[in-house]
Image (cartoon, rainbow over all chains, first blue to last red; front, side, top):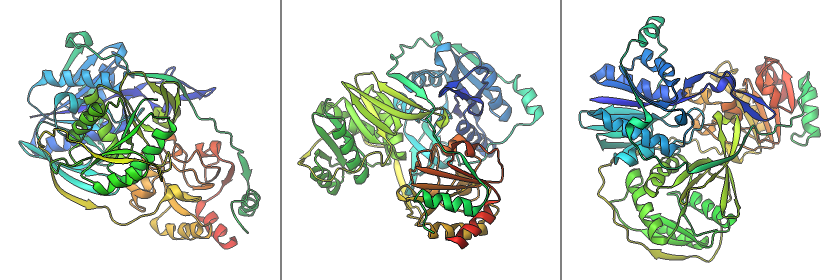
Length: 250
Length: 306
């Protein structure tokens, strides 16, 4: 059985600078989303305990061939990539159509894992949309996953309760950021990652009729932070200021 | 604005969505309740035309079936716009419903307003570093709104109807549902928050922090690792991108460096005070008062002097 882990190539958020409230992307490297790595780790733990092929699936511009090495180094058996310049930052509906088509080409897929949200947009739509396109059952916000040959039992962690849900395979599961601690690949694993098999398709090879982009972004700005930035030296000085502000009584 | 359909399995969140639909100037506000006649009555009393779908085969844990039922309801009722709550259940549902409707979708929306026929939505982007204003230009729209963005609608003239939609039998089995253990703190409602991060040395050091919060008349909150990695506080108290977004009068932030994944949850506070041993901590750039000191000493001294 194959386990597919959908991973998104995003700009390294730590390296985005803000200038005049605008995000600056110059020289910002690309990376895999953090929670995507939790999804990969969940797949690797299943592989280690009961055996399965783990396929890292991503769609993006040509850089994704390099970005995905991190997943191969961490233990994914192979990568399945769909390339097109339009796919970086594409709408969830478009990415979902592409990923679903790619999954359709694989055969013997039992489980499709996502992070609960991407590192940049955290919109959390793609997993649900892929499940919708493929007509598969889904369980989101997983805090544990127990896979058997024909079904998966997942604990879905909601704000006020945990639900234990059983669904037949194939199924789509999105994992919580704190489901596990992703492993960090060794240097040897990183060196070997480039030799692992990669299936690389150009977007037009999928022959998809993609939906028009449903969203329009009017602006994307860092929030204005007008803060006083007063440096105080002592607790007394702090309390005096807070009393003047009317937020503490002395 | 056209007719709007609202749905959340949580009555209070559905009532907030009615307020949102009112604010958008919807020509009609329709709501769906699923196997919940109490909710249906409450939402009718809050001003919506409510359709209760009564079908015990339809369980909230089955997101696919719920999405299919809502899609069928939206079509029958002639609604191209559906508002959901952006709690976890609502977020998971949003993508599936949008796919079923052929709709554009925005989740985690923290503000929205009508501009002619368009609905301008704000949500965090780039991990919270920016706030994007976006519109759904597709004809059909699914918008999931963060809890507490709007107050719940209180009273209005609604009505109660029933609605039959065809439900596919479900392959999803709910084996068990366990309530999460009882920390019912509501940090979003607190006027004062004392927020601790990884600068806190030990769980024992929480006691003086709690005492300080009590003296300030506030609650203790935390950055994500304090709850999820160290498990010193409950997840109810997490502030940040994947936690809560709070707007207290005073946020006293102790031992937190100030990564955007955290600050996005507190940057709307009226007054921010940072106590950190690192004078170059990023949190200082977004604070009103900055005290470079050991938080443990500061907490004790503040408590003594209040």
